[in-house]
Length: 127
Image 1 (cartoon, rainbow, N blue to C red):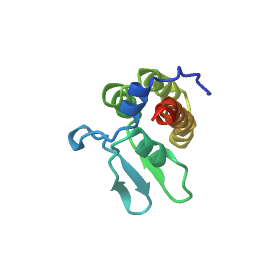
Image 2: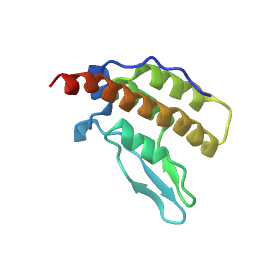
Image 3: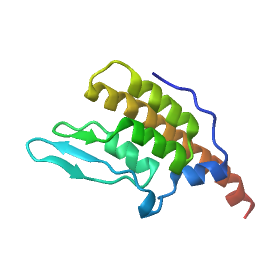
Image 4: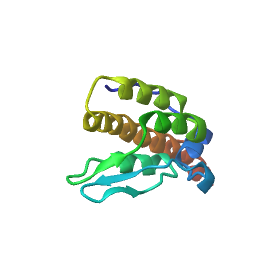
Protein backbone atom coordinates (compact mmCIF):
# COMPACT_ATOMS: atom_id res chain seq x y z
CA UNK A 1 0.00 0.00 0.00
CA UNK A 2 2.93 2.35 0.57
CA UNK A 3 3.75 4.10 -2.68
CA UNK A 4 7.11 5.72 -3.28
CA UNK A 5 6.69 9.20 -4.70
CA UNK A 6 9.35 11.41 -6.24
CA UNK A 7 10.15 14.46 -4.12
CA UNK A 8 8.58 17.53 -5.70
CA UNK A 9 10.47 20.71 -6.50
CA UNK A 10 9.69 23.89 -4.57
CA UNK A 11 7.39 25.16 -7.31
CA UNK A 12 5.58 21.81 -7.51
CA UNK A 13 5.27 21.61 -3.73
CA UNK A 14 3.94 25.16 -3.53
CA UNK A 15 1.34 24.42 -6.21
CA UNK A 16 0.35 21.10 -4.58
CA UNK A 17 -0.17 22.71 -1.16
CA UNK A 18 -2.04 25.75 -2.45
CA UNK A 19 -5.73 26.35 -1.84
CA UNK A 20 -7.49 26.07 -5.18
CA UNK A 21 -10.14 28.52 -6.41
CA UNK A 22 -13.70 27.86 -5.25
CA UNK A 23 -14.74 26.82 -8.76
CA UNK A 24 -12.09 24.06 -8.73
CA UNK A 25 -13.03 22.57 -5.35
CA UNK A 26 -13.65 18.85 -4.88
CA UNK A 27 -17.24 18.25 -3.88
CA UNK A 28 -17.20 16.01 -0.84
CA UNK A 29 -18.46 15.77 2.69
CA UNK A 30 -18.80 13.64 5.81
CA UNK A 31 -21.40 10.92 6.09
CA UNK A 32 -22.98 10.92 9.53
CA UNK A 33 -25.83 8.59 10.37
CA UNK A 34 -28.72 9.30 10.62
CA UNK A 35 -28.26 12.80 9.18
CA UNK A 36 -26.65 11.78 5.89
CA UNK A 37 -24.01 13.70 3.95
CA UNK A 38 -22.79 16.94 5.49
CA UNK A 39 -21.15 18.99 2.73
CA UNK A 40 -17.50 19.77 3.29
CA UNK A 41 -15.95 20.68 -0.04
CA UNK A 42 -12.18 20.27 -0.36
CA UNK A 43 -9.96 23.09 -1.63
CA UNK A 44 -6.45 21.73 -0.98
CA UNK A 45 -4.53 18.49 -0.69
CA UNK A 46 -4.19 19.18 3.04
CA UNK A 47 -7.98 19.44 3.33
CA UNK A 48 -8.30 16.10 1.51
CA UNK A 49 -5.99 14.58 4.10
CA UNK A 50 -8.24 15.92 6.88
CA UNK A 51 -11.39 14.68 5.15
CA UNK A 52 -9.94 11.17 4.87
CA UNK A 53 -8.80 11.15 8.52
CA UNK A 54 -10.59 8.28 10.29
CA UNK A 55 -13.26 9.40 12.74
CA UNK A 56 -15.34 7.29 15.14
CA UNK A 57 -18.83 8.38 14.05
CA UNK A 58 -18.45 9.63 10.47
CA UNK A 59 -17.03 8.56 7.12
CA UNK A 60 -15.61 10.63 4.29
CA UNK A 61 -18.21 11.12 1.61
CA UNK A 62 -16.53 11.32 -1.76
CA UNK A 63 -16.33 9.66 -5.13
CA UNK A 64 -12.93 7.98 -5.40
CA UNK A 65 -12.61 8.48 -9.17
CA UNK A 66 -13.51 12.17 -8.86
CA UNK A 67 -11.00 12.61 -6.03
CA UNK A 68 -8.20 11.05 -8.09
CA UNK A 69 -9.11 13.17 -11.13
CA UNK A 70 -9.13 16.29 -8.92
CA UNK A 71 -5.71 15.46 -7.44
CA UNK A 72 -4.30 14.98 -10.92
CA UNK A 73 -6.01 17.78 -12.81
CA UNK A 74 -6.38 20.52 -10.20
CA UNK A 75 -3.69 19.84 -7.57
CA UNK A 76 -1.22 18.60 -10.19
CA UNK A 77 0.01 15.39 -8.52
CA UNK A 78 -0.31 12.69 -11.17
CA UNK A 79 1.69 10.13 -9.17
CA UNK A 80 -0.58 10.41 -6.14
CA UNK A 81 -3.66 10.29 -8.37
CA UNK A 82 -2.45 7.06 -10.00
CA UNK A 83 -1.81 5.49 -6.60
CA UNK A 84 -5.26 6.61 -5.43
CA UNK A 85 -6.91 5.02 -8.47
CA UNK A 86 -5.03 1.78 -7.82
CA UNK A 87 -6.11 1.67 -4.16
CA UNK A 88 -9.71 2.63 -4.92
CA UNK A 89 -9.95 -0.18 -7.48
CA UNK A 90 -9.04 -2.87 -4.96
CA UNK A 91 -11.79 -5.24 -3.89
CA UNK A 92 -12.41 -3.82 -0.44
CA UNK A 93 -15.17 -2.19 1.56
CA UNK A 94 -15.81 1.53 1.31
CA UNK A 95 -14.32 2.03 4.78
CA UNK A 96 -11.17 0.09 3.89
CA UNK A 97 -10.72 2.10 0.70
CA UNK A 98 -11.10 5.36 2.64
CA UNK A 99 -8.47 4.20 5.13
CA UNK A 100 -6.12 3.13 2.32
CA UNK A 101 -6.52 6.46 0.58
CA UNK A 102 -5.74 8.25 3.84
CA UNK A 103 -2.64 6.06 4.21
CA UNK A 104 -1.51 7.33 0.78
CA UNK A 105 -2.46 10.99 1.10
CA UNK A 106 -1.16 11.64 4.62
CA UNK A 107 2.52 10.72 3.99
CA UNK A 108 2.41 12.42 0.58
CA UNK A 109 1.25 15.69 2.14
CA UNK A 110 4.03 15.35 4.75
CA UNK A 111 6.58 14.72 1.99
CA UNK A 112 5.39 17.78 0.05
CA UNK A 113 5.57 19.95 3.19
CA UNK A 114 9.11 18.72 3.90
CA UNK A 115 10.17 19.40 0.30
CA UNK A 116 8.81 22.93 0.49
CA UNK A 117 10.49 23.58 3.83
CA UNK A 118 13.82 22.13 2.67
CA UNK A 119 13.79 24.20 -0.51
CA UNK A 120 12.96 27.39 1.40
CA UNK A 121 15.58 26.85 4.15
CA UNK A 122 18.66 27.73 2.03
CA UNK A 123 16.94 30.87 0.76
CA UNK A 124 16.26 32.01 4.36
CA UNK A 125 19.88 31.35 5.36
CA UNK A 126 21.15 33.50 2.49
CA UNK A 127 18.89 36.41 3.42
